[in-house]
Image (cartoon, rainbow, N blue to C red; front, side, top):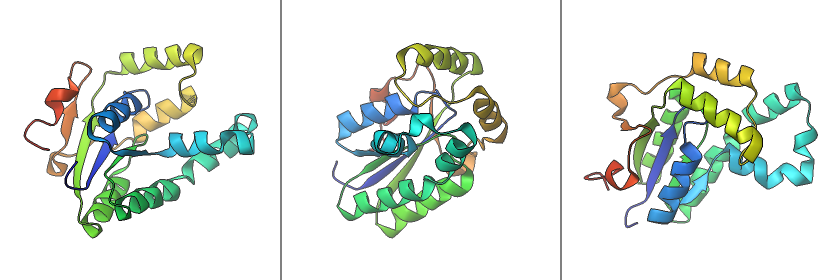
Length: 173
């Protein structure tokens, strides 16, 4: 990728952000940064799967500064980044856009607009596959209620369950 870009993925838990992040990474050679990556990197060292739920919730919330710093660091190294994180608030998306601007990078907001029934089915499938950190149902419900869907002024690129990645960035990259 010629120009540094931050791909900001925005969507609820199990909307396909991690899958899309991997596709973007493979297609454009960008680095993936997000709380799942941080969690899995330190999981064994800190025995995180044995963490009580209240402590795990606190840990999860406090990983955002690591994601932000990792994004900055990757841009400083000249890399483009796909930020794969859950239910980013408007303030967090603004922080990422500010990081992009400071680094002279372009920012693209991709909103994964996936129906609740599909999200629920994917969560159930994950209980078997364990491809990602489990998200308690209460968190999913809370996230859905608190999630700040992108506004039109943010110029999001809308991704649905039927969107083909090859078509997602036509005319943008």
